[in-house]
Length: 340
Image (cartoon, rainbow, N blue to C red; front, side, top):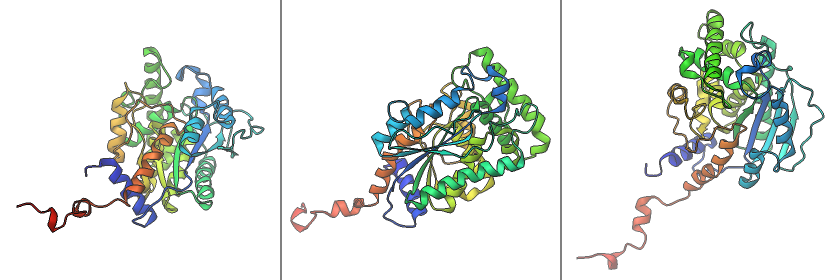
């Protein structure tokens, strides 16, 4: 136990790969991007306008000069796969401009609907979004990837994620909401009221069903992440959870398919932001045995924390080739070394 979380990660890699000599092969950061109907209808839910989602998508596609995720990916030999599943704009002309980035256009809809007034997605849209996530994992796994980082971009998606967390854990919105990208006190109060009202409006229909909670309160990018986590377990691919929103998607996936928890490792603290520790604690308890690797107040999203954790996964894999304590103590310990 002296190596703590590294030992747990080594065990996760061994179990997923069914070997005592695991490797981290061609890791990929899957960044799913989508807009939210509630944010499109109510700009005050986060400080930045909704069109920033498309701008960040373009920046990620542009590569290392333009995004932290691409910089981290290049530094740590992790390729980025940036996937439009629900941007509320036509970005179909965007192409990858850097060798480390791949861009996939898999749009399901121009954002979700406003969950304050109706379900965020139709049943067909939810199925499509889940399928988008699973197919991306299947594609990269077929090319040799056995570790995926799972992350997102979407203005207003902390509101949606907080609503999902509240609904899935029967927790009041005030404990699940943080300030997102910088809400003031009034903005935070409005966000809490919005989440509380949405959960109340959909409570009877959700009735403990995680899939229905996702359909009614989630985002297209969140659903794609859920599909990615579920597919990762099916293909014995280890999935690195990026942070709060990624972890909420992980929780939905675990509630839908408990077995997928076995391939998850957690890059960073699960709080939405440092002042929202209650939500992170609730999420960690619901997921169980989290043991996140990094404690650096990382909350950018975009797979940034998950990419930074990949070198630690490589170290965990390499650890399985190290001698045991007994073997190390026996090295050079012969009769001539004995003392009276």
